[in-house]
Length: 114
Image 1 (cartoon, rainbow, N blue to C red):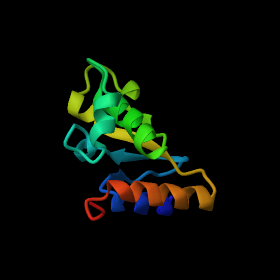
Image 2: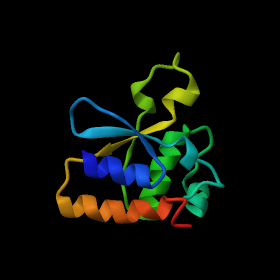
Image 3: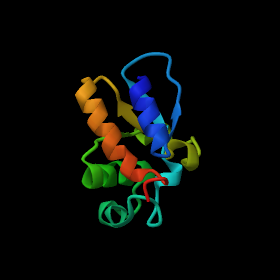
Image 4: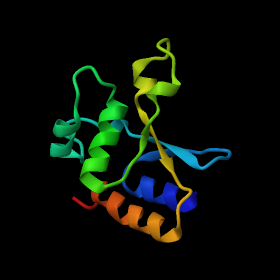
């Protein structure tokens, strides 16, 4: 959990502290859009009318080979759009080697890497 949390935070994705399970939420709001760190992958991943979290997850997979899960399906339509689309789920039930590779890839999103 700590390795994934540290990697996400170093990449500029704030994490939501979880009490258990094998997933953590990352706040992807600053990663979204054409001017975000996913750049051209964002444009290729975008679908008309689709929530931002879905586009982010598709662009992240295309750009870095990391698969995250959109969170918006877990919210009802009454939840504000800026809440239900601002997070993605990241699984940390992986080997140390896989988590280390994910950390290296995520660092390409870091503002310090640019």
